[in-house]
Length: 340
Image (tube, rainbow, N blue to C red; front, top):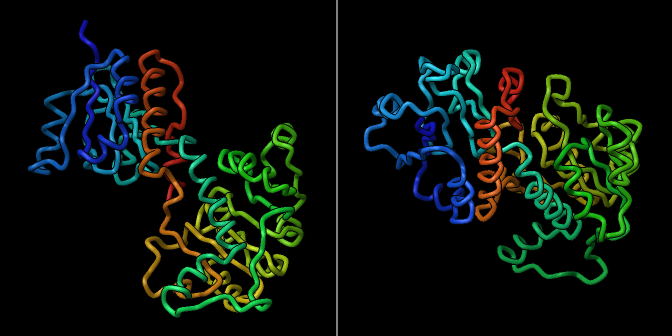
């Protein structure tokens, strides 16, 4: 009996980043017949023919992969049954109808948590030291410090509040500990045992989290209930000299309110953002140009050198698929509908 076909459509750049030799060796150990497909296709209309020709049981792909046809036969033993997507949102790749018809789909799951948490630490330090402001001011304006009038802050011995205590927040804990900080989190759905495991105090409310900590890091998942849950009142309650960091989801924060607070508290509140309510961030956004706001273009996820982590995660899932075991980070219809 021949091994099932794993179709691997990737650009040359994706192949180098996601499947370096050590990761490729892991993939080679699986009982799968690998069929690489070089992207982009010379004729984009040939994508459906490629799928029909090779009849893959599984697909390993990333950003460059063309969308799957919504009439593609899926889910049965002799059809495409599994897509291991190496990135985040699958909406541009997989029509909802295919998941309804039984196609298994996974994304990068928690494989990117540590790189996002690393970026969170970067934005915290950037905010406290005002490095985004000084970098621009020194290049553009020839600026220099002004003795005792120059105000920067240290992360050492600060209090940090995490809104959300999932995988990314948990990865942040060992990164923050060397700074001798106290850490609290607000996440009602997370059991006490998890807080105890990481030595983190449970914050009793969002009001407490925002008003009683020097630095607040936004990590709550986006749901209908969480839409604009971070209000102007909460943002204004952050302590003077503090910082607000968002590496979670943009729409959790009332962005218009954030802009007002950023303008009003330019002297005593620093803000670091990697996510926004509308992406890409519009060129005319009032967030651009504010001296107390550090901006990143949603790049907290896997850096170029760590994209291989998501492939290693996918290979573990492919092994589970072959062994008919439950997969990690499955995109259910509910997850699909909530994805941004």
